[in-house]
Length: 331
Image (tube, rainbow, N blue to C red):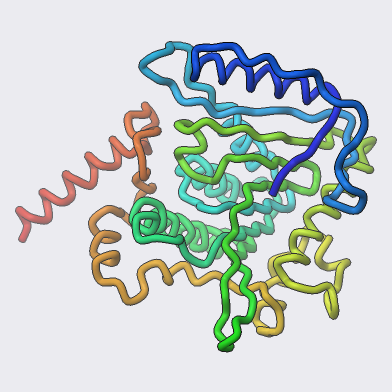
């Protein structure tokens, strides 16, 4: 998933690139000015009908420059989820962000807000064992807890992957690498940031976002809706026999996607999050060791470990350690 744009944003992006180059390489690399015109071939991509857009960054604090960290993307995600009234749609290579997990949980726990449809599209499995250990276990636990909260609070949560038929009849999962979030068809962000702790505060990331701030932005709302429907059509594999009106409608979207997945006629499949642990006793043991299912999730990296947040990995780890000692004494 990529974003292509022209106009003043190109100059802003060039300045950011030049600054990052200077800090990294210690030399200057002046870029030429933006070209005139639109160089994207006709019919490629979905036009976003917007007058304005925003660039947001993640930039981790380092020992060599004291001006970090920058956590604009993290704030963007949390604010958008908190403001959601109908739909949260997320595509991501990974889903292990403690902050995003908390934001979705708190939004679902808010009894004064409308019920949500939440659609999450992920790869079926990480590529390698190291990814399963570093992200997969956390992701499985987070998604399981989100499912519990959604069921208890009456929200609709659908977690899916896409797969094509292989030559031997077995499915070939599509490896999702996009990083997209859409809220209520009024907000869209595309960029390099996964739904992980690293992308929220440690790595260098860049997103571009559009928001319809009033009903005067109907053309933007329509283009975001068309964009979302186009993504889902790709994951489903065809628009033949698909009710596009239901696909574009936020309310009842999870129910309709569940129906399509259950027919087994399309590429879209319901995600079995337990597949991360299936048949692997080592991973199951690590899951029990690293996780406390009654509490929040332990992060997979240093970001937020020493956060002052009471739900940070440091405080959770101390709680888990004390429980472990108590069990040992009781045993």
